[in-house]
Image (cartoon, rainbow, N blue to C red; front, side):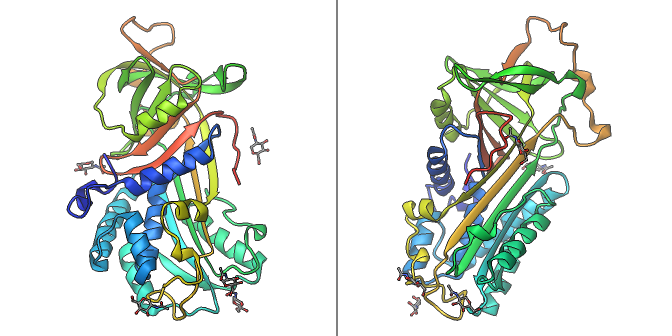
Length: 379
Ligand SMILES: *[C@@H]1O[C@H](CO)[C@@H](O)[C@H](O)[C@H]1NC(C)=O
Ligand SMILES: *[C@@H]1O[C@H](CO)[C@@H](O)[C@H](O)[C@H]1NC(C)=O
Ligand SMILES: *[C@@H]1O[C@H](CO)[C@@H](O)[C@H](O)[C@H]1NC(C)=O
Ligand SMILES: *[C@@H]1O[C@H](CO)[C@@H](O)[C@H](O)[C@H]1NC(C)=O
Ligand SMILES: *[C@@H]1O[C@H](CO)[C@@H](O)[C@H](O)[C@H]1NC(C)=O
């Protein structure tokens, strides 16, 4: 189960490699912290840059992203993908936004914007990057607007250097509406074990329902579907603190089918916001020339030799009790806490866990919850 496998099968056997690698780099870099990212969203942004790149710059991007040589084909893949995303938007709050902001001294090729508008629903905008306060406000305000006010402050003036030439910004936001929602009155304050020695009290949601689950000697895996969509959250919960690394590997290659059973699910409410700058990570993944003065973006800009000076990613996910609407309550599956028959399995997320949010063909987010109360914004 990898991103774009269906469409890319003809061109590559390594599909999903870019997103997998990016998660690997990021989760290692930010180990032992809450973490959420949408490598999928970053991939869309970098593919959009590829559409305006030529020469070695384009070759490196193509190799890292595993995309076909023919740009028309790339455009077609993304057009299809964006159409699917837009159709789904009516039922799930999943927002992804990509835009390249370039210093106004570089002219933008009009054809390029036409192309990415059609196939990526994205755009390149020229702004004055010299006025840092104004530039930061312009960029942050655009992101806020695109994510329905949920992704705030992606750039502050201090994040912008004096010689900023082009900044790629991508933001992703997801608000989960469970198919089988939790009842607010069933949420109780409970202990969450951050580590063997460190614990916090968290609001722990609780419900009994039919879910797909399996348990092994190391961990438990559950899949919880979201309403009116094919989206679901897959959670890998290691039995022991310290089992997170193994859990990352498990979720990395997760494709197995789980068995349906009656499960008592206990899951903390959480909200994770995560901001990261990606140039160094992308360089490690083989995209190098794009970030140097010899970059070739001749399809995008009227003047070549303009490097992309920053790539900023911010993701935000909020998980709570809610169903899709008042009418969508799934109260029928709820039992009082004391009346569980012995056949009910338990999934109690009272220690760190990892998760993905996905549908059949795409992993939209991957994250890790170490401390549900920490709303740390990293970097
Ligand atoms: C960019 O690449 C194109 C196509 O390979 C080439 O024609 C052009 O000369 C290159 N421009 C620069 C500045 O390297
Ligand atoms: C950005 O544009 C201004 C003019 O608007 C120019 O003075 C400045 O040198 C440019 N900066 C870079 C890094 O290109
Ligand atoms: C879920 O996936 C199936 C099969 O791909 C599709 O027919 C259906 O329209 C999808 N449902 C939603 C709500 O997107
Ligand atoms: C790239 O260009 C900028 C601005 O023209 C300059 O300050 C910087 O030193 C150059 N970097 C390299 C690696 O040549
Ligand atoms: C979460 O963020 C808010 C606002 O920035 C802050 O007041 C609060 O202390 C933070 N909570 C934790 C647990 O860091």
